[in-house]
Length: 136
Image (cartoon, rainbow, N blue to C red):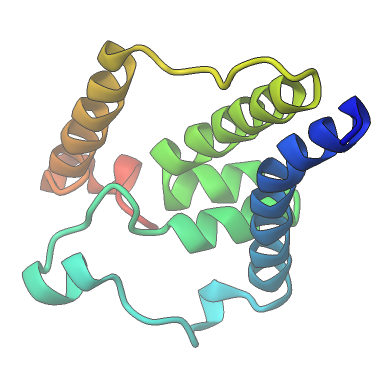
């Protein structure tokens, strides 16, 4: 097996993940979640409270169609997280293509992300903040 074959094999997973995310983004861009047709968030359906992901599909649609303000209005947390995820995916792809070991985020960053998601979920359900943090 040649070095080029090994590198191509290394980028297979990040390319597959990127392709699946691109396909899902295309579906959400073409089929507007603002008009319904997607299932209700299970957390919202069971508890009546918004989770950190509520409004995420509408936010993804708005970002995919160039409406950053609309995306922010649907889910500010998701609007920030999507470009960060894209950069992390790009780092993964480059490291795989250059045959470097996968990057492992520090444990504190994962804990911080989860803590931010929980805090965001709580704050977006405060009635006074709903107009700012809740899906509009």
